[in-house]
Each structure stands twice: as C-alpha cells, then as structure tokens.
Image (cartoon, rainbow, N blue to C red; front, side, top):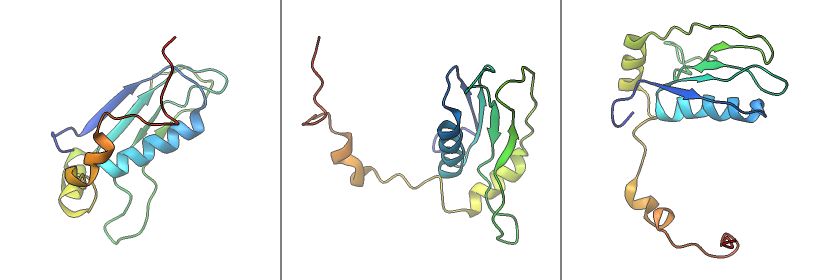
Amino acid sequence: MLKGAEIILVPNDCGCMNHRLQALSTRAYENMVGIVMANPPGENAGCSCAFSPIVWDKTGKSVSNTIMLADNVTEGLYLAKFDLEELRNYRKKDMMGNTFRNKAYQELLNDRVEDPFIRLKL
C-alpha cells in the first residue's frame, strides 16, 4: 500500500494450502491490497484464490474478504473482479495499511543472527 500497489499477484506452485490461504487473506487485510494467487491443481494443492482487503461493510458488519476460491483439483481459468474505487475509498477510512513503524522495528531489521538461528555452512 505504501508504494501504491492495489493488487498483488502471487504465482505459486506448492501444496499445504490451508495455512497459505489464511496467510494471504490476512496479508490482504493488513496491507489493504487485493491479493490473487494462481496455483496448479493437485492433491493438497490448487486453491487459486483472490482476497479483498475489505473486511467490514458500510454498516461496520464483518464480511468475508474471499472474492474467489477454487478447489484443489479442478483445472481452470478463473476471474476475480475487484472494485478498485471501493478499495481506494476503504483505504481512506480503515486503520490498516500504513501501520509500519520503522523505529520500532530497527532491532528486528538488524543483520545480527544469534543462537538458535545460526545456520552451519556446509
């Protein structure tokens, strides 16, 4: 959002979809961007999808942000429609998107690696 992205396309080729779908839905909400993932079908795969960042309707009621979700085995070409004007208006009103606080993350962004995360070079 900070650099103007409105929709992010994620080309993918992997399995274990349930956790990935939850993460993509959350990233759409947190970053106030539409997210679309394309993934080839297969056992424990597939699930091409599109998520909106919009999780509240105009009355403040929580709504699903799933625009499109394919099953795991059907091969197809899918269409996901985003209302960009609605997305832009939503960005002006909701609290998410511009919540990055650089000073708070300085320690997390430093390159120092300590145990138990030191990896042996083979």
